[in-house]
Length: 257
Ligand code: 13P
Image 1: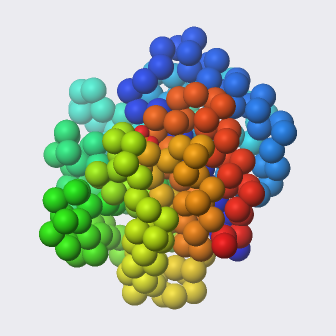
Image 2 (image 1 turned 90 degrees about the vertical axis):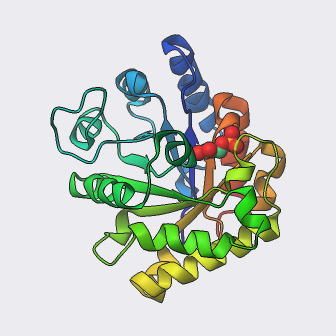
Image 3 (image 1 turned 120 degrees about the vertical axis):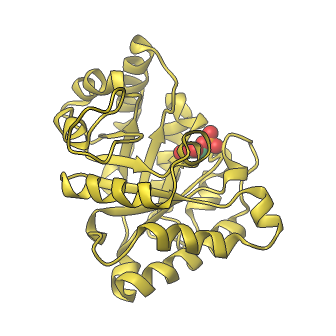
């Protein structure tokens, strides 16, 4: 049974006091939710990792980062290394988000190195993939997903510490969500590809999150799909009530349809 992972990607939002107030709100609301059935992760901006981590101490909520450099350390002004994130209390790092691909030119070989660095230095990775609207309309969704998987994932990746996030670029921050069928279809394709790399049994145990305008109103439909194992949430994770409603939907649908 795959335990759903509901992760909040805060992107570049929230000042310090707002960040603390948000996690406290999530923590309070979680008291009424069966957290044994779901893994909850928050990924705040770098400067608030320590403060948010301290606020979360003793709670089941995990801490993650939105990006990392691939080197262990070095003269890379402005960058942050995985061992530093580990030291700050992170257990996950998001790699390959479409905003990193689009605005910071991160592609295949760089992402290949980043995924390996996250694993080598002891953390878990959420590797994001997804097609643009143009690619979907040209009927290239599966070819794009296949390329993004093949460029980065291979048998040297520790599948036990890998989560894949399917985030169609056209659904991110647009309010336009993939239909439950579109999402489920993409997840089945991704799981099949992962099966080709890691073997079918391992692929059955791998979590594939959906991301892209996940909101309280559509969460149950998406999370109820058999191959959707949680959500990577952007906008709706910035309000405790919305994020909690998505977590509750994951708990209610845990185990799939
Ligand atoms: P939205 O939920 O705002 O569409 O963002 C999704 C996302 O990019 C999560 O990583």
